[in-house]
Length: 118
Image (cartoon, rainbow, N blue to C red; front, side, top):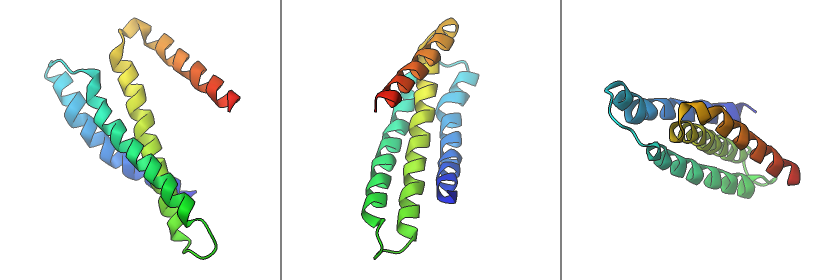
């Protein structure tokens, strides 16, 4: 399980400075920032997530070294972290402040319904 934690920590060390540069500093300078600033980070997260699943799937057998699946799990966790963080930031930046609680509640409901179906 440590590989998942390591993957998330590495993604956080990359994510926080990028968000600070692209979102927080322009907000503090009172510039207008559009929610689409989060999309490139989600694209990177999607690439990491799928490549991590590919690495994990192809390296998890008896003949390969044990570090292969761990590297795949860390890469998958990094991608999932980036996707979820950018999703929540995108939703929070897309709606007016008095609608944000309803937006997050509907997102949680939708994710829970989809999870219960599958």
